[in-house]
Image (cartoon, rainbow, N blue to C red):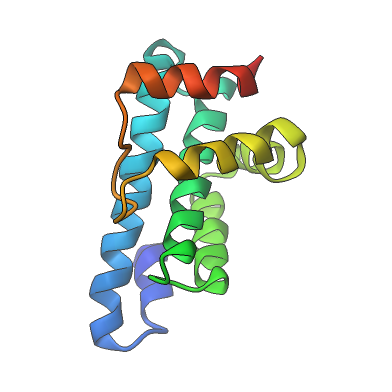
Length: 134
């Protein structure tokens, strides 16, 4: 059983579909952010930071739109880090450093209303994000 299945077991059946959808959206956003900023940095520290920014921004968007509570999103973050402990340094950077927190906040306005994508081109998005990674 995967960690997401364990997490979903705590929710009513009709909520499971929504949560599975939101988990996949978060993964897509993380991939878009990572690809848009540095396709050549696969699995590097920078790529993990970029992926984490996308993950956290999508989670914040989901909370802002009322699709899930902060507690639920925090649980997804715990699950996400537990699935790959190499993500922990990126998570700590994104949640404790001024650049990391600013990058998450700067990302949220560029997400689509359903939190399922970025509303600007990858190139434009990369320009917005790059100052936070210097």
